[in-house]
Structures are given as C-alpha cells and as structure tokens.
Figure 1 (tube, rainbow, N blue to C red):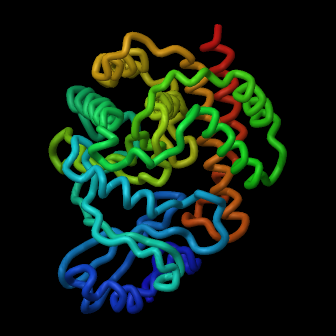
Figure 2 (spheres, helix red, strand yellow; figure 1 turned 30 degrees about the vertical axis):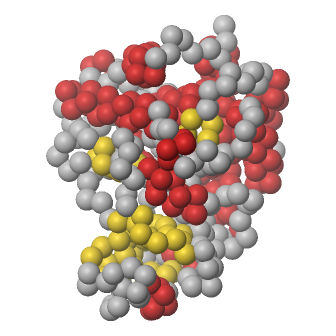
Amino acid sequence: MSAVDSPSHVNLLDTEKLSRYLNGKVAGFDGEVRASKFSGGQSNPTFKVETSAGTYVLRRQPPGKLLKSAHAVDREYRVMQALAGSDVPVPKVLHLCEDREVIGSMFYLMEYCEGRIFWDAALPELNNGERSAFYEEMNRVLAALHSVDLDAAGLTDYGRPGNYFERQFERWQGQYRASELQAITAMDQLILWLGENLPEDDGRVSLVHGDYRLDNIMFHPTESRAIAVLDWELSTLGHPFADLAYQCMQLRMPADSGNISGLMGVDRRSLGIPSEQEYVARYCERMGIDRIDNWAFYLAFSFFRLAAIIQGVAKRAHDGNASSKDAAKLGAFVGPLAMLALDVIEKESN
C-alpha cells in the first residue's frame, strides 16, 4: 500500500491490486509499483505511478458518494483519446478502468509528461518576452481547442444540444444547492441575476475545456510551447466564450484566491502580459470574430460556476471525502467570488 500527504483513504492506492489488474493490459506492470499523490488538484486524486518499465500518471474518482455527473474520469479519458494528434496537445492515455472494485473507484492511466507547470499568473520565473510568448501560446491553444472538428474527432455526442449557458446554469445551481452548507447572500443574489439575464442561444458550439487556465497546461521544459493540456473533467460541447471568459475571470482575481492565481492590481504592461482587451482581441482575430456581446454575463457566470465548484469541494471536505488536505479552507472563498461577480455585473453592464 502506498500513500502520501495524509492517512486519508482518499490518498491511498492498493498498488499490489493495481499491478495485478494492469499486468498484461499495460506494458511494465508486472513488478513492484510505487505510487505517490500529487499535492495539487482538488477534485480527482492524481498519482504518479512508477514501475520498472517507466512512469505513468493515474487519475481516479474520489471514493465515497459523488454528486451526479461529477468526477467524470471516463469523459476525461475519452476526450484526450479523441484529441490525440490534433493541434490541442494532450497526454497519451493508456487504459480506462470502469470496474470500481479494483482500487475503489473508476480510474485511468496516462503517460507521464516532463515539462513545466506554472502556478503564478504573473510568471515571475520568466522575462517579459517569455511572458508574452506564454500568454500568446495559451491563446493559440484555446483557439485550436475551439476549432476542433467535432465530426472528425468523434465528439458530436459529447454534450447535449440546446442553450449551453441555460443548461450549465441549471446544473451548477443544482450542484451548489446540493453542496450548500450555509446561506450566502451574495450567491443568492448572483443566482437570481444570472437566471434573469441568460443570453439567447447564438448557435456557437465547440469543444470546451471547462477549466482552462495556466496551471492546467504543461509547457515544454525550455520552450514557450504547450505540450499537454490537463484536467478535462469539466469538458463538454458548449459555448466557446465560456472558456475565454473563465480564463479572463481568473486573471481578474487576486494573486491568491484559493489555489488560483490572478492578476488583480498587477501592471501587466510592465511585465509583458497582455491586457484582457488585448487577449480577447487576439482570440477573436484567431477565430474570425468581430465582437463579443454579453461579456458581463459570461464573466459573472464564470465566477458563479467556480464558486459552485469550490462549494462542492468544501462539502466533500465536510463529509470527509476531499482529495486535498486544504479543501476545507476553500469554502471561505465562495462568498468573495460571488461578490467579485456582482462587482463585474455593476461595472461591465453599464
């Protein structure tokens, strides 16, 4: 048995049972297997798995009772398999195990990529030219993601038809209410405004990542080139502006907002980092778009959805099933996130 970070059952892997199961399914799983949990991430526990034949990454659902449609590691596996060889860099996936009896929950195995992950949106490790190049690369990959040919990728049934934001609003409102530990006035006000201001469906549909941000992208060890977009749990077919607004929302946040780094109050120009207006304009140029309407809604919805996700993590911590030992602290960010959304509504809607 191998465990790191804490004695919690969330952080345990039965490596002997895992080795027996994968023997013959994945080359190299016929000897000693060592597993250590990555400290990052709040949703699906992720492990570095080392064998005599090489190193892999395993992502599993957390054990215990889960909210409906949450922690869909099988969807992660499917979308990364579909994107192999495309302009969207993804790790090579190796095996999906839907038998929850093997290690206690569904999991998949993928290749281990050597590269760099940056946690600070200001990129203090880099110079100005490099910062500009990294943000340009993130913009390029996002546009590539939203340009994926769904027919060719076999993903035409990866999401439901209809108004994406209406569906997502209902989903996350429901999951927020199911995870609610106490009443938060700002969230109630935000939910009311979003429900009254849902935009009309404009017919735009693309593959969306759902959590597209700096620390979910692995970059080349020495180049400003993305080598793997990670954490596809929230991916679906939806509105591309949701991903764009989500990334811009996070860059509007304070430097430390619960394991998420923002650029609130940072002089971007002095660092070589594009402004939100410049970043959005570059994306629109790549996508052949003249303008984006309803920007206030897209931003406010992004804050709401993140708050709902964090509330779910806090609820799992309350129930003893959270992946991270810091999960319980995240609940304190729900109210402030809702307040930021209300501030966006007030300023951007005028």
